[in-house]
Image 1 (cartoon, rainbow, N blue to C red):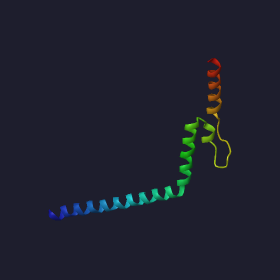
Image 2: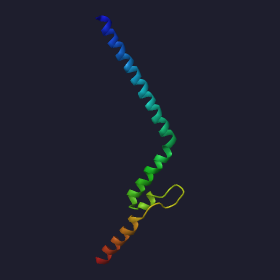
Image 3: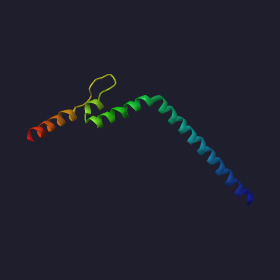
Image 4: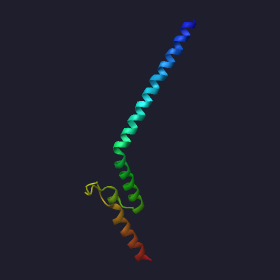
Length: 89
């Protein structure tokens, strides 16, 4: 019977080793992706933050080439609402 329990321990050790190798490969892949796309991801978050701070969708949806890819709902709607509130006061 002792041989059978030794086999179970050996199998568990092998499974743990395989798990560690897989986790290591996933970690290396994540590091490679962040290294390759880090600047683009940072720019995406920067544009999103600017859009939330200014209320303008156009700045968040402008591509790196400077071409507009969306509708600027923030500045037109905000300007009309602010003007209407000022006129009513």
